[in-house]
Image 1 (cartoon, one colour):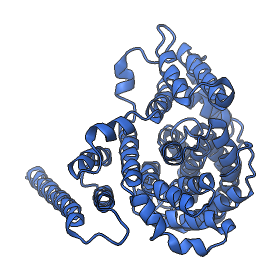
Image 2 (cartoon, one colour):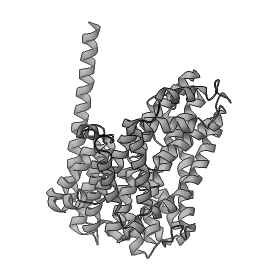
Image 3 (cartoon, helix red, strand yellow):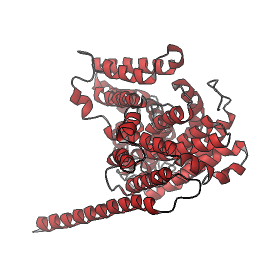
Image 4 (cartoon, helix red, strand yellow):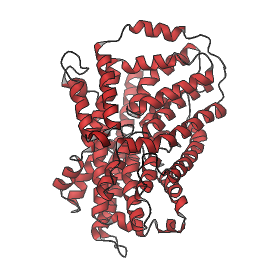
Length: 484
């Protein structure tokens, strides 16, 4: 009887949820229709007004998760075609056909290979063997491991591979979820570490891919892999050190030393045995990709070419990790790819319809009174605030970067600097758990609350904004490329 009642209750709840989502879907369509009948503001083209409607509907569906977020992204080309803004052929060709799409596929495939081969676990344990038993250092090592791996593997994948190791350690010292500051500290270490490390390279987070693509398309500015690393790494190493310090100060661990030494880590490593062929192959391919990416301005190889090469090498008979296509198909984060494609389409429409230019002339006009050195700070704070509702760094970049590029172009501001400020800021809003899947995964284990993240996240978001602004102003630039 209890089971039947429970089933009935679940069915009612599911029905209510479906009803709510249907209501959100209809509201979204109504919003789209509203932008057809509203008067067009002075200086704005009708196509720009309709584009604003598509963007408003897309953001509303993203915020309410009316449809799965990647599905909403794929609705963008349909809405653009239906409203007459961009033909489906054009939006698909310039979004799915963007060279950054195969680049992202290779990066995601590398993440899959790290997990499938067991290389991620081995590297993690090898680095943790250096940490000793002092808790502050352990938290620092977990932060560092997450930071470094995430520079070349997507942040969500890094968090997913680190979580079992963190949970195992916490359980071994009987750290209680919701009570232990050690638990809060370790979870936030992998969460912040993976996010901040990911911003340091184009391959770390998808919002970086979005930013690079818009710079190429909308501003005709190319940024090489090495350029990006040289600009971003000093900034986010500095933010990372501050983040580690904040974790220890705001959530001081209840113990100073772990009750065991390095023996547990060495035992785990011994249990893994010698390096497998798949691990060796993955490591060789990874190192080759890093070298080719970092020297792309010298070797002349597009970063997308290197990514496709990764996929081929990881599938080589007898030595590759991928024995059959289903190995990749089942594990690749296709949703992240679809979200990037939808973001490309939104940015393309904003630029070609004149919406980005209009927003730059009107909505962002008050920012023009600020002196140049404060412009990056204004951009980072603006993006941090308007990104609060997004559940994806990629979505935040998709909406903000095209407008900031147009604003910089119209006001003779350094376009690269301003675009990077917006792109970096899209991945450095740490206030709400819902802002990224890499926050949601650790939160699910119950070691920290919404309030805990808010307490440290507000400070870290402001620190990040300041560091980004200062870093971009000071960057003369390490890569030898002017912030034009």
